[in-house]
Amino acid sequence: MTEQIYQITNDKLPQPEEVEALLRFCRKKAASDLISGRKTWINRYLLVHLACGAGLRASEIALARTGDLDEFGEDDLLWVRRSEGLRHHQVNLGAGLAAHIKEYLQLRSTAWGEYSAPDDLLLPGRKCRPYSSSALSISFRRAVEESGLSCRFSLRNARHFYAAFLLAKTRDLCYVQRQLGHANQSMTVLYLDVAPNLDYHEAQAAIW
Image 1 (tube, one colour):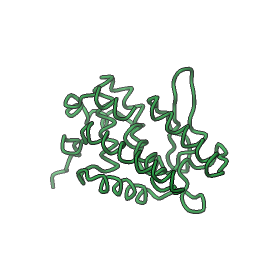
Image 2: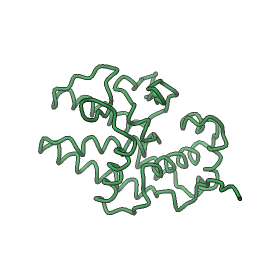
Image 3: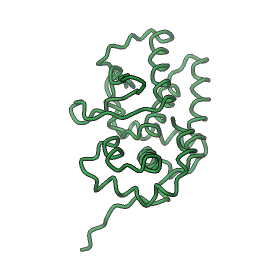
Image 4: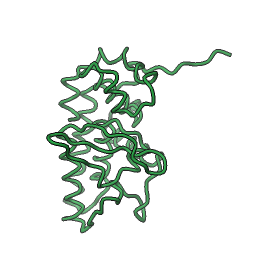
C-alpha cells in the first residue's frame, strides 16, 4: 500500500483578498455586537485574527492566556502553549494584531467588567473553561459562511496562509519553522511550492 504524502497546494491556500474580506466582515459584526451588548462576534473576530495573523492552531488559541502577550523592545510577542497548557514557543505579532489583542483585553475590563489575571484564558469558554478545538473550528467556519466566502477557507487553511505569507516575506525556513513551532523542517518545507505564488505585501496589509 502506497503511503500518501501530505502536500500544501494552492487550492488549500486562501488569497489575501479573501483574508482581508473575512477580517473586515468580522470587524463589522464585532462593532455591531459591541453596540448591542453582545460578545459573540467580538470573540470570533479575535479568533479569526489569531488564526490568520499568527498561524495558531485551534488548540493553541484555546490555551492562550491573557498574560502570554509580551513586549520586547519594539516587538510584540505571543507565547504559544501546547499540551497541558505549557508554554512552547513565541511568535512575533504584527502591530495590528498586537493592538487588537490589547484593545480586546481593555474592552473586557472596561465594558464587561472582567478583570483578567495573567493566567486567565484569552478566549474563555463556558464557566471560564477552554473551548474545544472543534468548537473554535466551527466558530471560524461560521464566520466564513456568513461572510459568503469559499467553504474551503478553514481555520487550518488560515494557518497555511500565514505560513506561506511568512515564507514569502522572509525566505527564511528556520524563522518560519520557529514561528509555527514545527519540531523539524520537514513540515515547513511543504510551503516552498506555494509561497512564491502569494503576494506577501497584500497578505501583510490584510493581517498585520
